[in-house]
Image (cartoon, rainbow, N blue to C red; front, side, top):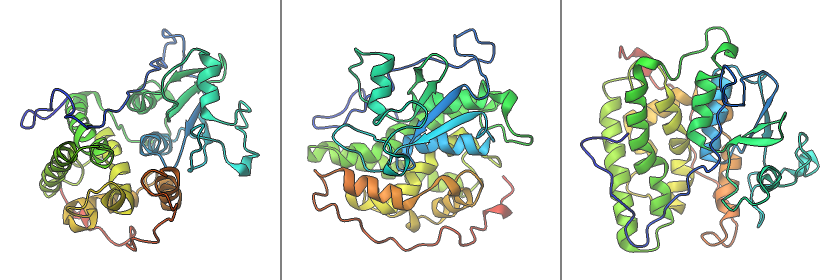
Length: 315
């Protein structure tokens, strides 16, 4: 699933950042054949409004009207030495499991678990175990296996006829944009940083050109591909431009991308799951190695609600 015009490297350069993929790969199924049948009230989504990978799941849950079907537990935006924790406002514990940290969910399901304690997590309250922590599969399962529970009139974010195109574009976006900002910001050598930086802005330039011809990434309707891109765009000027040294251009410098991002933000499910306060607190107060003072920048001052004009596009 990558662009034929821009093949992906076989491996990271020396000093490059490699992300661990989701390591719990169960699957909810409509017919229950996987052991996790799609049932309302059975599953709990664990997520953070600060985390871009969680943000995708929060968007899809809201857009498809699954709020009463899949429960939600939200973590504090600032992580501790134990990782994602539950906020003081809830007594410091998850009301569903009583856990203080997301790590406890992983270890309750598998005491020998040795991977990273990542979000999002889809939890089965019936068996008290994690179904999956694969961010891509969490949203796809909501879009497909929970289709019977979507709100009336909900959009089809993953239509069968478009899946190959969605997956191909989403994979390019993942490698060069979603994860690309991390490859730049967490690189430990100049060469690794510059490779990631160049790939990121090459892709943003291509997306800018693409969006001059169509309202959304694959035409006139929002799809899973747009869901994958938006969380990174929402964090770009506030975090990645400065903290992760992705400073060739701001999102606001791209007329098409900036208009597109506002178009999505102003749709139900996108803007109302975007919390800039939590986003900035997470990145600037959780990463002491890159921001030891813990000071959170006040800016940028931009209006995500100004007219975008993209509703006049025909494609």
